[in-house]
Length: 103
Image 1 (cartoon, rainbow, N blue to C red):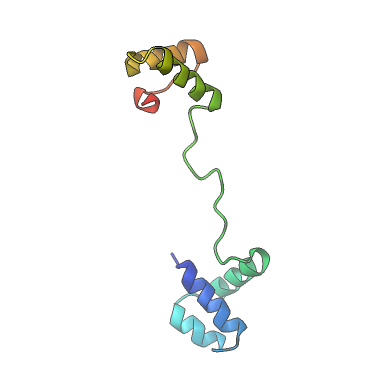
Image 2: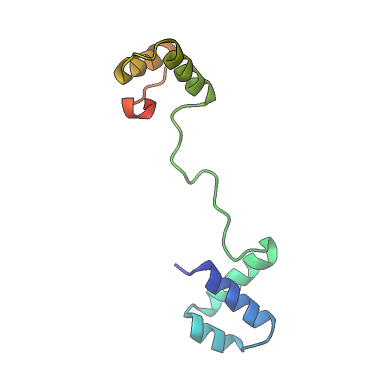
């Protein structure tokens, strides 16, 4: 994986004409094709790194209403065990979770 700093440095060196492209590529160690792909991304987005998709993280089991339901359960019955909360989530919210999700 190429560091974002190295990508930006390569683009800036090329834009400012400090080094010729083949010299830059020798120093940074990536191909001509990679350089032009990074340059194109930089010209379109202003950054040398692709923006992360908001869907790359693990999908969430609970939505906001489910979390609010759990919070209310704990407020009204702070002595409940996690496995009891898990059962209530399944029965009342139709969401199957592991007790560690409720923790």
